[in-house]
Length: 381
Image (cartoon, one colour):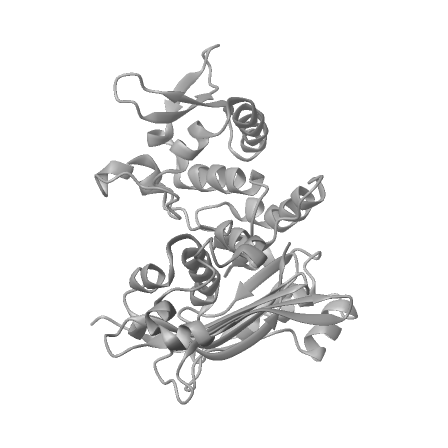
């Protein structure tokens, strides 16, 4: 299952958005244009499915934090997702007098053989008789999502990665509370260790081979448990003039090595959409150029499932891959009426298909902030 369409209304800095999605999507735009907020709409659905509406909103601050600042009527926040052109899930919510998030619309539609069937349509008679029910979605409750549980399971499988190497090296130094499914990497080594041994060893061997190409002298990646502390650590041998080389753990890995390692580990997971935030950070330009092709080849190697990937990026090297199609790029543009998401125009498509331009050449220049050249005149004196 993949996401084929996303609609937003009054979500963060988007007054509205309506975009189509394929198996791979690159999201570009200047800083603060809404790239991360676009991904966060999908993370929000995951959090609702896993932890409920109230916690999903609270984790983002409050209703004020998720609602578009200049929202007009209707002011409800709405996220709607179409899956495989088969399912459509829509969730709209607002705040009650106690500033608690409450469902104003929750609808599930299924399309089969050209026919539409409405599986869920809230508020219903029970909600009207007991408005407290509207503080929870049907999505988050196993006793109400039985007919569309595969949607809840799909949303729960969404993964977000924005690895911060310093957190991978020293997770307890930032918080004494153990992390779970931390998008920034605090528990990534624990996740590797807790993977079944056979699967773990196969993945680490493949990752070690890839890193051996990208990182000089890198070989024999493994993970080991420190018996004294009970904390797992990565272990790798760096070849040098001595025959046995030298072993190091993640504390000595460079930022780029840790980012690439955790990116590769995330890609090997076979379930759910993967949301990648600027994976090019700290990586050599020549490695960045290889990533889009690597994503495509990895997907083709899967025997049963397709893993959809959403990637935010500023990297010209990433978008220089000629295999990236015009329909695989969305551009966020900030404005006085909020951010707008653009797909490639007909002219963009023509330049890329007939003119032979890459996404970096045809689309990336459009993300340049206006008057950016004036920054060269800026002085601290």
